[in-house]
Length: 331
Image 1 (cartoon, helix red, strand yellow):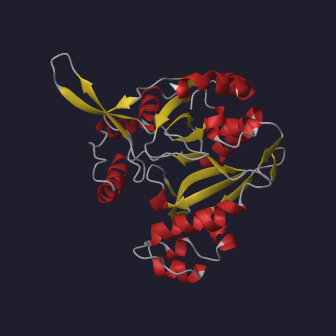
Image 2 (cartoon, helix red, strand yellow):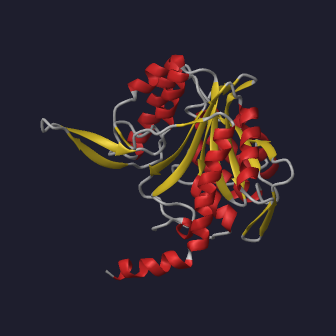
Image 3 (tube, one colour):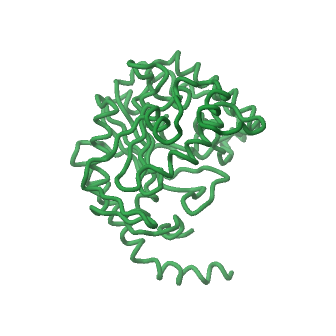
């Protein structure tokens, strides 16, 4: 009862931030509609919520009129559904979707949040970065303040490959050590923790040495991730150790994640099998069937790129809000 009575005051004190959020929602739709995108809506409660190894899902149950029951999950991303729409229509599409990721809570994470996703047939990774840069400039002021950082959005965004980032900030040949945790640890001059594999060490070094250094003076696209860290992206034709993936960082926030989309259903099924095996080792309760509808649609998916952008974090950057709860209507 105390929480409910406090809500009106809490909303009132944050109203300028929330009004800015509402204005940004309108600006998102204007940006994409002017570029010929079609806004779509896909189901939130789905039989297959995704295949991410480390995400935990909210589980619910569908009750049919005949009394039968079937497991449903609140999706972690509308990606599979939106690609099916692109495969069926060939159109550029976008969606402001509510998504759910259980067990996540911090100043920059909420278990339920808004994800802006868009998919553009004919776009490669470079042209998607161009469009993302234009989008960010359209939604944010020319200069963004985040903590002690002053980020200039008027200058070209940095484009930094993961290989170059690890060479610069870690002193390691990332792709050359792929799968060899001891070699990566030796080059990075760190000791391996108990049970730490190459993937674990990669993410530790990314978190501790790379992410704190990028996107501080201007936004940074961190591109060409190790192929094993991009299960839905095409491999780089110039170096198949890397995948055509980027993430966008602004002021210490990881804002967006993008792929040049994989369209080979055989390779995609193999990648799903690898991820599912790993997920079952880590979280045996996170089990569901493979999304056969998605795999069946892949051969019809035209060459395209797609991106998922955390809209709430974008609002945080626009308003200077230090916590994601500050820009949610009810948190």
